[in-house]
Length: 423
Image (cartoon, rainbow, N blue to C red; front, side, top):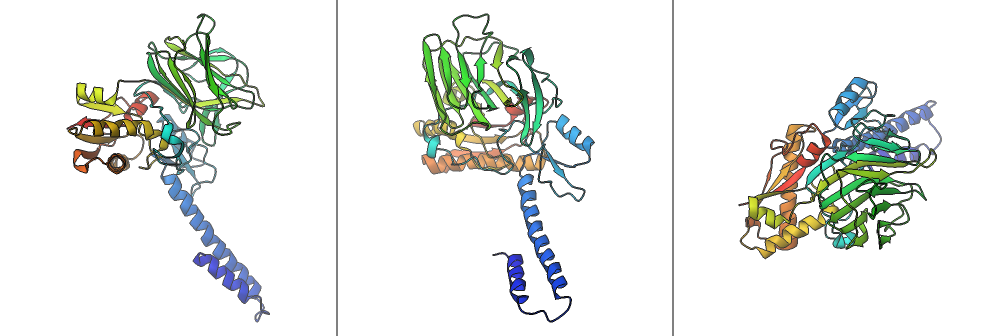
């Protein structure tokens, strides 16, 4: 029991006896209010600290629209406050660019890597980002600038956890990639679909190319369908009217599909085709709209050891952390397994683990965060793969060594990375 609550209980007991002064009830009311104010202040402080964990967040008074717009135009998160600087309970702009839409400011991703359902999880995100979009640079109510409308009705919508493209009619949108999609690639997006709805992903124009398949996501079953091939199954949890993370990992005709932490499809030979654009089928209506955000398309590189042997260093985007923290997320399991096994198979290999961030937020905070994240990776490998700590060193560089310009979503995605350097 907190001190404030104890005080309140004591006072309530004391006033159970007949009042000895005329104004005792008024005094009690004032004391109650003070106790309540103290408890509320503690709650506000806890919420304040939680919001402070949003990486690179900018604080803006709710009435300061210029501050909010400036931060959004720069691709930064916004924590909205009252005139005294206290964060409001409703945070419509608090979602960091590039982070999964369902993530809370200080929420944990769940079980750590290598435990629970993550044991058999094998998705590894591509490292060369081809396209990334979270719609933070688009105007609410408008069609996204970087997508192309084929048919239907779509607009950018603001939700409490970020911005989405919202579909309210049957139709398609195209994602121009600017290059031919490679044989090995990954696709990711945060999606919300009503019961009976779906999202279909095509790698080429479905009306012009015969004999190609597609990937489908819906609340009851998801997977891949192609000529003579079908691999679909139900997700591990109820995702009706809930934002879930959709993933596709393709290597030639071998295609795997994931809903959150479950692999729902594993098709060893399906023809999805390839082109320089992606097509999204997004049917919805006003009562049951389809929502999508945090789209990421990336080329997959060769194995980490092969890249290290060739160039002496390799960047990976498969090691993920809780927002603004150094806690490893469960999705990091496949990449950590590959690094751990590589170190075990090559006992003479010594590595420097480098942490890097984008330039969103305070430089000193980014520097500290990158150092802690690099140290967390080292500690995990030492503890879980019995790697001699002397073989590993950890360094953080913040945003000082950008791999790409921070002016685009793709660039910021590329810069949020862990690099392995051969010593």
